[in-house]
Image: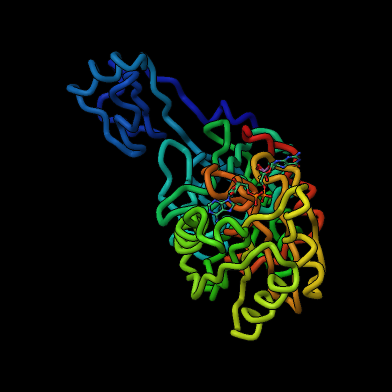
Length: 336
Ligand SMILES: Nc1nc2c(c(=O)[nH]1)N[C@H]1C(S)=C(S)[C@@H](COP(=O)(O)OP(=O)(O)OC[C@H]3O[C@@H](n4cnc5c(N)ncnc54)[C@H](O)[C@@H]3O)O[C@H]1N2
Ligand code: MOO
């Protein structure tokens, strides 16, 4: 059956007493965008000028047949098919259902599934990117079908794909909460250690870490001495730190000892260097499963560096792999 045959066009002047088949939107640029009339609204004589003002000279009267879905129901079914932990669904609004985060956390979106669904046609599933930090109430995903009436089989296909892609029990859209990590901070640099200049790394790192609910339990200053830096890494490991950050000395000068010290501590190096600017000199490593990050000078003064991309992921309990670092290059030119 042609879905158009389920829709009858009626002139608004003849539509008094009839029921609206979908939400009607008004847009006044700079002032208002939203629903002027709800689906299910019974049209009155007084509504006619308002309808004409938003360009509606006709409305649809709908007689939905077996095997077809209204846009609101289709959007709701798609949203329920992908919804995972810490997500709440909005009620349908202008044919769209929104998945919102319940918590401050890290968004997870299964990109191959989203691409597959959007390839089907007549469907729009718009998401934030995976690993976006989201606030409570923030929208992660909007689901909508393009026509007013869609074949039920198309939505069943979305549900089947969701079951296939999410087969391992992992939802296709979810939010990971941040863990509260004990963080050890080692600040290298003889000029800071000897008091020639005041430390500016500590406050910045404390604030960034606190933003994800973790805490720098202690900061220790060391000179540019590899043996001393290694000792401090082991000190924080023995103190039970779940993340160790080493600042400064990450570049190419003879006094830049930090990469060598992280290596000499026995840590496995995931990557020395990150394809992102600012933050290209960052090192990611693990010592017996404890993440160690070498932070270059730019973290002190640039508001968004490779550290700001990786820190939330580490705080959400993700293990950073070489491929994750590789993937940061595309889109990683943030200005430096
Ligand atoms: N020829 C090259 N030059 C630079 C490279 C490079 O690859 N080749 N990399 C650049 C990048 S990227 C960065 S970032 C910077 C600095 O990296 P470092 O981590 O080695 O930083 P430092 O040399 O230790 O210090 C730079 C600067 O910042 C001051 N500093 C360091 N720590 C503190 C602190 N805790 N409080 C206050 N100020 C601090 C330090 O005194 C220096 O003035 O290198 C680029 N250059
Ligand atoms: O580690 Mo650097 O930012 O690329 O300045």
